[in-house]
Image (cartoon, rainbow, N blue to C red):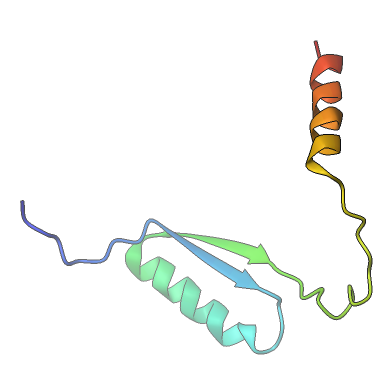
Length: 77
């Protein structure tokens, strides 16, 4: 069986925060997608690490989660 060394891109994911620094990366991703005849998917990402500092998310036990999900499933019948 012969190995094809040609790289084939069918899909390219371009995550971006739409910052000034991402403009060149967007042009590169678009040119790459065009040259490879690939689909370009753009995903908007946000850096929430600074905004969420000190934000408390209460822990839920797996047992409680199971009960909640079981209740949802039973309610859908």
